[in-house]
Length: 308
Image (tube, rainbow, N blue to C red; front, side):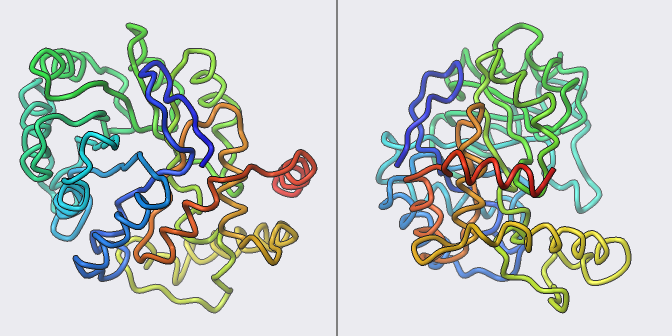
């Protein structure tokens, strides 16, 4: 797999990581064995970066538990990232994050769920947080305690990224980017590249749309995508499917459209690692294999033209 340096951390990561949102049940039921087997299949294919969050799963936190269990025997060989800020939010009971203790509490709870002593990367999950002083104080305390090795922010807002890098020590930015959503090319990606901030790409398959497997008749019953069945959500889905049709030329006998979509993302020079989800072994293996090559210059130019 192609390797990149994750910003100022200096860590070497494969360009294809593993995003653990999908294994927790919010995208449809996933059995524990299937989740753990998917993680280990990605590991066997060269993936060394695994991203989760305290809010992921049904119940929240189950994603962290399964990530920790799946990687327990190789803890010193992988990089584990998690996020804090949204635990219990969808149940109407989020923490206020008015004190560093809230961040520390979330971090310690994550360590407990994953059964690890230190998380490599802790990210703020509050995408609109422009006043990060509380988080800075918490990050500093957690760094001193040895509970985290680095910190980052999850956002597509350039103002938020700049706020979290105010001291020059923000290690990473996790952002939504795909051939269906190229807005980050205008500001966040260039800023991160200029400031040596590692980029972690969520949504590289846009919740599955970029794979080309959905049609205008597709129906959804999972928690994440059920609003696509009618109204504005349905209209947005159809518009994106029109774009998908324009890039189907990327499919060939040796590459699926999903793999090409992932390769588009990591072809951008500012991208460190993409974190597609996988709910089974086949998906995990296919995603990892996509990390062995980039799009050709001609392919990349054609996709950019088709999705402009």
